[in-house]
Image 1 (cartoon, helix red, strand yellow):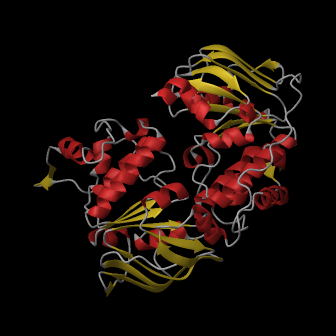
Image 2 (tube, rainbow, N blue to C red):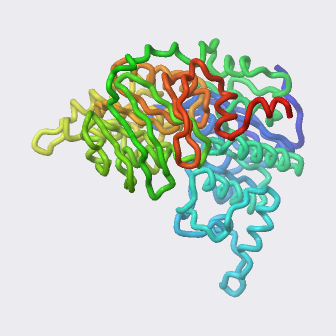
Length: 509
């Protein structure tokens, strides 16, 4: 594969290495990034692509090797010096101030002062900046009130407000809708055409192939290759990432339980203050049930109410044959009704604590005597789950925040399984996960169902539900309005239903 020549070299890495404890995150990586290109970094979770982006942006310092900016070697590389040289980063872990407004976050550290007093016009500056992208965010809204996708947009705008020449985007599309992804891709092209370099770290290979000019493949901390994106197939890219041929994306669908089996979880006409209007569904032991809906349809809000995070205004929830309406999240966990949240950092993991502690966190009572945790039992459970989920590296004493996004997701799933659930609720279980790790998670979901655990699944990638679930419910505007058999329905038919489009009319048009 031959490299595609772009503009002048803005940043060059020569034999850069980086270690975290015993883990070799980068191993003598050499590459350059150039003006006027979208340069994608791809690889499995844990391959080193995010670490590589963070070294370029000054978040991490290299242990060995040399970094050159505009042809000159740099010393004491850090985010401040990188920003002064026109390098910004949008991290996968959002770094916003929740109690400040959108506009204040965007221009935080880039305010215009006179005599120590901030000038007026932050909102006007925001509107001018946002008009070039079309995100349409309210500059006065508090960041804490925004959903994850909109918080991601604030991070993107924040980097653009600093006139960066190199923008490292670490998984920027992981929380965006298909329409928002297209908007972001168009923005990348605009930045490229202005002479900027966009470093695009992503596991969305279709998006990478659609927008990138060059692609660098990482594997086990090493740069495997850098090549022109034009003419590269998705299959060839995956093979380069994994170092082998990828097996079928989805495992064989598990055997559905007998339809006469009583449900272990039953939801009837529930309504909440969070936007759920009238949702009904049930889940049998050993059954995978999906909720198919667009962003904002009320899927997540419904699951939070079932789990006990949000209150139920009306309707009924039954679990294991008894009334579960109004129960708390703690009561749910103790009874084996477990939720894996879409936001692993906010609701799932304690990033500064070890993998062992995180996995065992949901089941401390069962691993303690007289209030004292049995460390040997905690270690055994954590190691079993981490090994089963193929976490890399398999070191349960490392802080979970040191791991890649996909491996953090595996730790979160391990935490849920350690609670010995009867029903497990999975909200976007493969968000931020690469193709190889997705297969591992799909196999895990299938094994969970085969063991007799009920699974309630939400995914914005509708194909995941269609390939894994035994049954699925259609959700729109806080209501369930239909039930389908995924084996007898196409994704296209589902989308027609969700968008309220008559397929015959659409075809005729």
